[in-house]
Length: 297
Image (cartoon, rainbow, N blue to C red; front, side):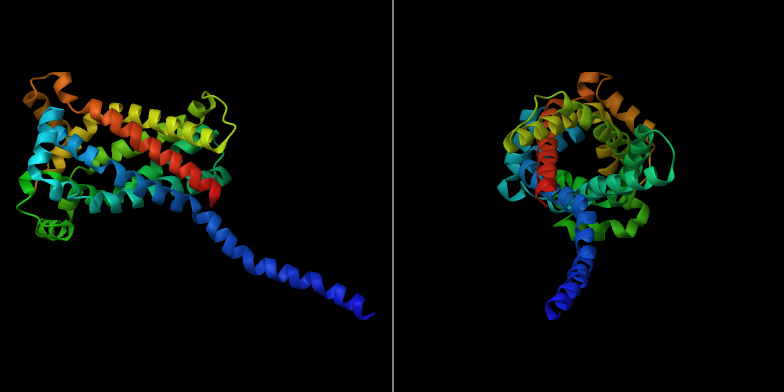
């Protein structure tokens, strides 16, 4: 009789224990897309920052790769990682939002909106990209710190933020229009094409093969999007390198750059080959790291 009563009392205890743990398990599950995106961004920025800096100089001044590298050599190793804190803060935050919000918004829209899945996921991608634009000030300060013309003006990230304060909050958001355009449409293409591209790759049967496929898939997409949106980034960089003065529109800045570079498409795309390789490596690292962490968390 005692054994029978004890047996009858055990299930409620076990059920209670599972109920106590379930909210914590749910919280980890809800946050894992954000965490994986954050870690993937950190890994990427730490590896590819010097390449990005060479590319930045080409976008801003329209110079050749060799000249940009020579500029960095003259600046010295001490300045090589100058400006890394803003992209580190920006990328870890924005990629966490990009992956996390995309998943959350996709689920939310599927529950409440009766539209084709492609449309639902596209809207979720645009909304996630728009939210990322909140952190434009970090991208803005990164631009100022990487420009050697401002090396004597700003000692660090905090100093640059403080210096912009006197110009008003709007000054932190120079280049917002190209950022919104780039983020929204690139997100739609990235999330929309990631699955189909991976399906056309050789079937992976091991963990290492999956990692390689994820790297190739992310790299190809990143390289393609990097080329597609390269002129947008050129205009954004020019807009964000200015401190104070008139806020010029996207078409006006584009026209100015077009005239400066002798109306030649090749001059407008200076640095695009390096951007292609950087994006190939960056998004390969991001996608492979993200998918790997998603499996183990």
